[in-house]
Image 1 (tube, rainbow, N blue to C red):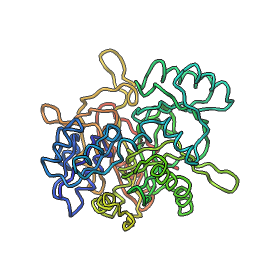
Image 2: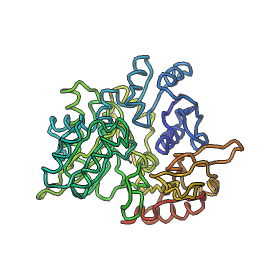
Image 3: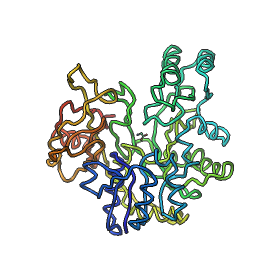
Image 4: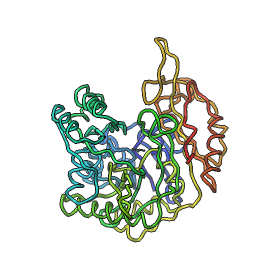
Length: 431
Ligand code: GLY
């Protein structure tokens, strides 16, 4: 069969790689991909969801799988389904769960799902009054999509007021800042929890630990993710049961019954586990409608079941027949980013602040074939050299019987990669 993967980043490379492993897949296309993805699949330069649907129709694509949230929020699933094309990913109405932090929180509160105390505001003055009134630290979130950077965790009233100013008045995240969700800051253990769902049956995946902060010891700004590993040390069967019964099941059933949303595809719950008496309550900090990046880079290599079989079961509304098998060995992902470099007019601070692009990348060919290399921001320049095009450039995914073994391997292999200003966190997987 022919598969089309929509996306351009490391997660999307991992999805394309996973499909390329399937004996049932003859050809994998990626729209629009990058230089690394082009080594795994055939990249096609399709930019709009209409172009993608036209391509899927013309090329008789059997299955399309969507990596990022933007095309889903733009309605790619609705468009494909209206044209009789098979696609994995929630529809536009379901995508509101990620594309509006404010609406998602209201829905979850209505459905009795644990969420931090919160209020939504479209007036910055009222938002500031609220911050001064509550008497506890808050997190200020831009309502719309902000590439994973729209949540500002605040230690003080002053910081929270500044967050409102940046998001709503300076509009550092553009129109995503028309409204804000201000929620009580919770303290506990963060966990990214992923499921497949056909809108009725929910099948949990293994979990991954993501590292969002740019610098070691979880310091520095929030990024899209600097590394990850799986299995997650905290996720055991009782906790899976708690998350399923208190969050995933009421959410999927609730949006179907109360909001007429048939949620099909991937569900990603960003949770804060808070100990309350003898219990652990899984509070939902955010919902994403897709696989995580860089969580997919460690979860998909552990998935032994064919992703085509899972996708077909989702499309047929028959997911109950699937029990995915997982490799128990650890996977660890280190992301190489565009770090500090000197420009003509001074220094570039590096991702997630400004960074230089177009820098030649050396050493990818020398990586041990036991490891995987997924690309996020690379292209071939006019002379065919591999160069950087983004803040997150590429990642190395290692495996090991223990987390320590996987970590050492990834660090050793990453030393073979070189580009000006390369930066990666050396504490990924260090507990
Ligand atoms: N790793 C965070 C995200 O994918 O949003």
